[in-house]
Length: 94
Image 1 (spheres, rainbow, N blue to C red):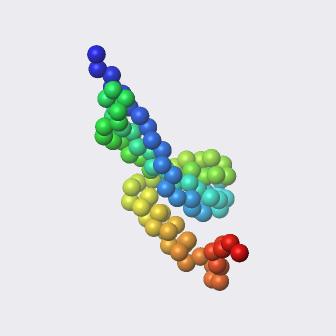
Image 2: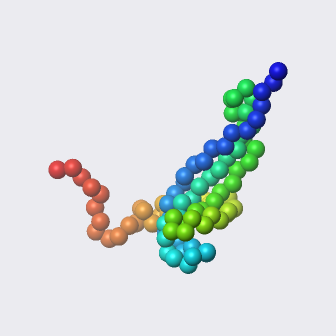
Image 3: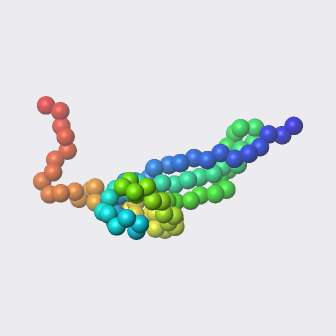
């Protein structure tokens, strides 16, 4: 008897402020990576499907994006955090 199947994994890559295509509000969007892996005897062996999506936190609309777009959005988010507002200091305990 051989037991096989699939298992899905969901990774949150970034939180971005974008204008939603559905509701038109500038709101936070989560950038997510969904990976489906083939399993054999409940052990995940290899991924066979990877999808990237953004989801609006205001209206809940989900939009699929390409890998290149996801990487570009991640780089954009990392750049905006690195150069945040001028004069802003990280929190330090007294």
